[in-house]
Amino acid sequence: MDKEESLYSSHQVQRERMRSSRLVQSLGLVGKLRNVLAFASSFNRLLRREPDFAIAYDPFAAAQLLRRQPSALKRVVHLHELLNVSTGGRAERLAVKYIRKYLRNADLVVVPDVFRARMTQDFADLHTEPAVVMNCPALLLELPSSKLLPALRERGVETSKIVHYQGSVGEEHGLELILDSMQFWPRDAVFVIVGGGKKEYITRLRQRAATHGMVDRLILLGRVPYRDVFGYAVGASVGLTLLDATIDNWRFAAGASNKRFEYLALGTAQITNAGPGMSEVFGKGQLALLLSDLTPQSLGRAITSLLDNPEVGGAMGQRARAAHLSSYNYESQFAPVAERLYSWKYRSE
Image 1 (cartoon, helix red, strand yellow):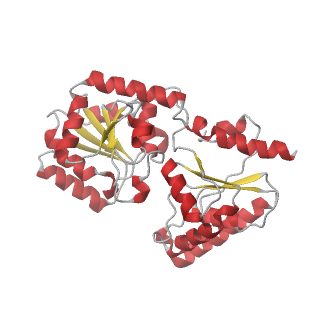
Image 2 (spheres, rainbow, N blue to C red):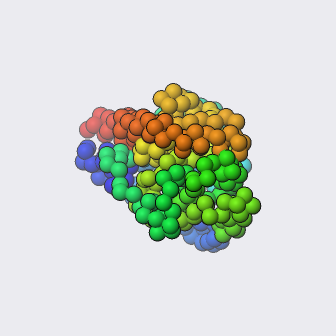
Image 3 (cartoon, rainbow, N blue to C red):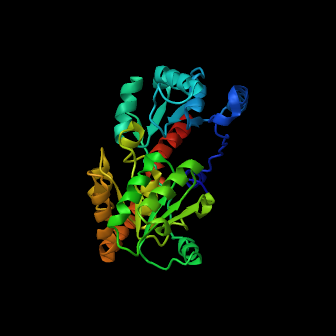
C-alpha cells in the first residue's frame, strides 16, 4: 500500500495511476520524445473518462494538466522539487517555464516545505500560498525485523556502534565529510552505507576511507529492494542525513527530505544539518541533533556523543518514533488535502 492508498480507500475512491513522465537521460532525443508523446496520449485517454480531479507530481505531468481548458475537472499540482528554469534538460526547462506562467490556473498547489511554499508562490505569482504536505513515510505501526544486523554479522561485524546512511550515494550528501570525521569516532564504530551510486564515486569513497585507515570500518551494502530499505536501517545507532545547503533544493528541505522522516519512523537517533525550518520541524521536539557548523571535528564529536551515551540516543529515538506516530506520517500530512478533494466531489453531487 503506498502513501495515499489508505486515505483514498476509506472514501471508496477509484484511482488510476500513470507511469512517471520523467525523462531518462540515456534514451536520447528520439526516445525522450517518444516517451513524452506516449505519456500525453495516455493522459488524454484517462481524462476522457471525466475524473473528478487529477494530481500531477512532476513538471511534465503538471504542464500537461495545466494545458487543459477550464472544466469540472479539478487540477492539483503536487511539486516535490523546487521549480527552477535554469536546471535540468531542455524539455524540463520548457515544462517549468510553462508551469511558471500557468500554475495559478491550478485548483490546488501542494509542496513539501513552508519555505518552498513561499518561494513557489513568488516564482509563479500565485494568488494564495501552496498547501504544505511534508514528505513523510506512510504510517509505520510496527518496525520490521532487522536485515542490517544479520548482514553485518555475515561480514564479521559485531559492534553495536553503527552509524548509518541510506539513499543515493553521491556528492550532495556529505559522505566524504562523514568519512573525514571517522577519525574522531570510537574505534569500534562502523559506517554503513545502504544505496547505489556511480562506480567512480564509490571508488573515491573507498580511497578516502583508506587514507584515514578506515577501509575496514566502511561497509557498503549497495542498493537493496525498496521494500527492504527500512529493515536495512533497523538496528543502527545513528542515522546521518546531511544535505548540500548551497543548493536551494536541499537548503529548503526541512519538510522535503524523506530520509530525515524515515529515521523518525524507525525511532533512530539522527544528526542532520541546521537550516531554514529545521529547528521548527526537528529541533524543538529534540527529534534530531542539528549541526550548523559542519566540520570533520564537529560532526565526529556529535556522532561520538550519541554512540558513547546510548541512553541519550535512545531517548531521542523514542521522541522521534512518537512524533512519527502522532503527526510526521503521510496519512496525517496529506489528510487536509484529501479532505479538500473529497469536498469538491461531494459538493458537486
